[in-house]
Length: 121
Length: 174
Length: 144
Image 1 (cartoon, rainbow over the protein chains, first blue to last red):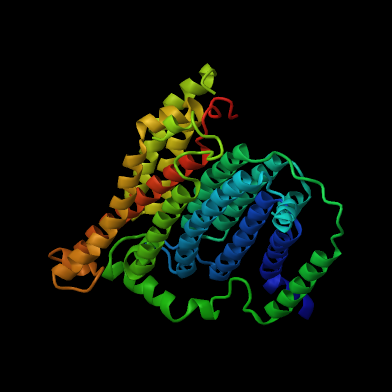
Image 2: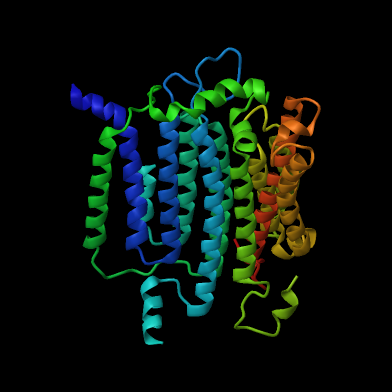
C-alpha cells in the first residue's frame, strides 16, 4: 500500500516534527524564563535527531574503520552535531547567566511580571 | 521521548522540569546509539544529562522554585504550533526515505572521507579525523565559542555575586 | 552535603576514577568514540561532583579563578599555535602533514595536540561556568 510505504519511509521525520513543535510551544506559550530555556533545549535536541536520522544508512555500522566492515553510516552529520551540542550548551549557559541577572534586577523570572515592571517604569 | 516532552509542558514544579529535561536528553542519547552515532551519543549523554542539568539546577537555586499559574487563554500559540507542524509535515513528503543509501546526503563528500581517511590520516575513528583534520577550522571556531561563553558568563554575573547587598560580600571575591 | 559520610567516602573513591576515565577518553579518541569534547566535559563533571559534595569554597581553593582563566586561554592557544607552527614549517595554516617526517605521523601528532587543546578549554570553561553560576555566599552548604 502506498500510504504504508510513505509512513514507513518518513516516520522519523514526523517524530522530529512532533518534538520540534513541543519545544516551539514551550518557548512561545510558557511565561517562566527557565521553562523557555528548557523548551529551547527540546527544540535543539529535535533538530539533532533530524540530522542524525538522516545520516543513518540501512545495514551500516558506526563509522570506525575496521577491515571486516563494508558499509558505514555517514560520519559527516555526526561531526556537525558534535559541534552543535557543545555550542548549544555554551549558549544555554549564557542564557542561564542572563536569567540570574534578570532575577537580580527585577526580582522575578515570570515574563508578564517583567513586562509589567517595564511598562510601569 | 515525546511523552517526556509533553510532561515537560504541563509540569509546574521547576525542579521536576529540569530533571525531566535531563531524562529527555538521556533518551535522545540512547536514540543516537541506535542510529549508529556513538560519538554523538557519548557527547550528548555527558553534556546534556550531566553538565546542562547541573547548571540549570544551579540557576534554580539562585532563582524561583515553582512556576506561576497563568489564567490567560492558550489557543493562539496552539493554533500557530499546529499550523507550523502541518506545514513541516507537508514539507517532509519529498524527503528521501529513512536509511536510504542513495540519499543526497550520502554522496559528494562523505564517501571520499570514508574511503580516503584510512590512507591519508590513518586513525580508525573517522569522526575524529574529520573533526580535527578535514574540518579543523570549524573545531577552532567552536573552541573559541566555548571560550567566549565562559568569559561571557564571568562578565554577566560578575565576581561579586549580589550587587544589591554590599559590604559582607566583598571578601567573597576570589 | 558535607555531613553525609556515605556520600563523602563514595565520592572520594569515585572522583579519581572519573578523572582517569576522562584522560582515557581524551587519548583514545582515535580508536573509539571519544576525543577532546567528551573528555573535557567528563573532567569538568568530576570537579563539579567534588564541588557539590564538599562545598563551593573548598572547590575554589583547589581551582582558583586565575587558574581557570589561564587554562581556558592555554587550550585555545595550543590550537592556534599548531596552526601557526604549520605555517612556519612551510605548509598552510592547520596543515598537519608538514609537522613530522611522514604525512600520517604529522596527522597523528597534529590531531593529538589539537584534541588536547580542545579538551583543556572545554574542561576549564565548564568548571568556570559552574563555579560562577553557583557560588553564592552562605548558600553552598544548604544546596541539596
